[in-house]
Image 1: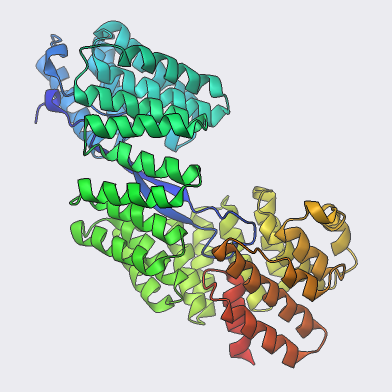
Image 2 (image 1 turned 45 degrees about the vertical axis):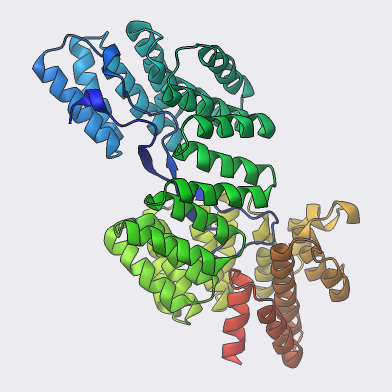
Length: 504
């Protein structure tokens, strides 16, 4: 295949993880705090489709290197793209096709790796591609736009995204744009507007992109994400379903809709979508891992372990898979094997705060309280935002005889005014005897079903732990049972209650 017929907007980038973040700090636990995996359509790298702009004189060796670079790009081998195009540019610094290909790869690498230097180098390459290739090559704008939106995200500077909107406006004003060109630019402007939280304008852009190219994968999935960010769950589901209908043979759309169902607590529907993705592409390791995660959230540790074993055969040494399999083994009561998996995840990714949290939960449940406290503390040291670990840290301190020091360590939560307390604060106040259990349970979320179940589960779990410490074993058993009745199978508190009931 010639590099002059490179795939356009429908090509896919490498897999990116998207963290499954809870709306409330209570949605903690071994599985929930790990990442589900999504695959995103290429945002910037809709590669050249119109060969009339590509008539550069080049020797056969350079042409072959560009062809190889294009193939490497499509395979997600971005360092190879940079190496090949850099060799071309060393001989011909104004080869705008090579600049465009290198820009595309560098932007992908910079955004996925959160590497500002690489990202800025990609943006500069894209500017030079436009400089030497002419601003009539619409696809040359794509890595520039995608890179600037990524720069806005990494630096927290909205002016970069505003530049994208401004320049996209001028490009879209051209009367000669093809439907593909128009859809791609609308898509880029929409992404910038999503970053700017202008969700209504972004929705219009995504919708217009779909009108121009009805099967535009990125626009369909971008529209779904935009609705989710705006809190419009019903519209998000409709957008995901439209993506499936317009790209029915693409496993990506089933994987991403499965993630949506998973995050809504609709685990059976999520598993059905992940299964369809795997049916369409048996080598789709992301969907295999996600199906294992969904099985885990349904409380089926054995099914989860089967999928995670398969994922590990397909992609060895992925820390996430070890963490998830450890949780699946914990759910089956196979503690030593779970510990091995958690330690292997840490070995592969020693700076991952959630790997420490996972290990800490396992140690806590097996009454290794000093080790659990150290693991929880290390997790929070690496990521101070993991406040949901604070009640676990407090309980671990009580278990190791540091009860007098615990209130001082969590003074900020314990001294908050009632109206300012979140769920974590309330649990800490209960554990420190500043709030009775009736008040804790009465403060559970009332409107969000998933948060309500999670808070009920966690509330009863800590009530049980406190009763057990006071010697009230019968009361603890009843409270553990209440935690199980919540149905919040995704929580570490749920698994902890299961293990405590088995031990009785």
